[in-house]
Image 1 (tube, rainbow, N blue to C red):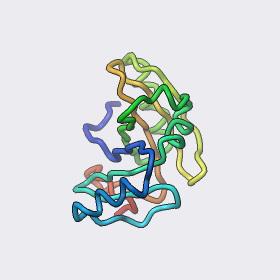
Image 2: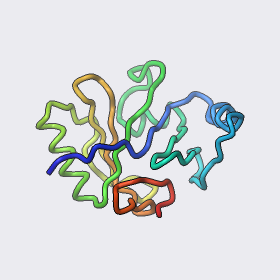
Image 3: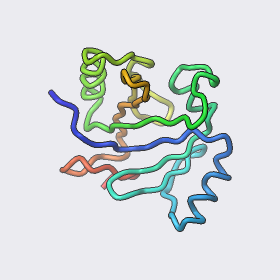
Image 4: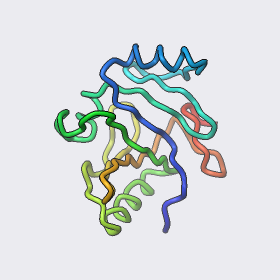
Length: 143
């Protein structure tokens, strides 16, 4: 197995979600329907998500101060929960630190987090509400 070469979701931890959303709206970006607490903008085969900084730290399992400034995660969405487990194992074998083992989350998905050797944090996620296109392209509410 290999990790497909794509980033599905870019999540930016922001101190003020409304203010950040207003900035992107001012650029002409349109929001996608999203659960409370998350603002999403569909991009071309990717999504940019704005998420409260303290909730991002909680999701990852790190103290807020460990995120520093400009906190974000790179997300790789999968076709199944099993792929999440497999990719976390692959990342560990490749030298990553597992920050949060795979598990269910409140919105109905299945996620885990790892820190790459370069320090960037990745989320590996199966979102049953946002199925991937045949080519692996991601859209917030699926295809």
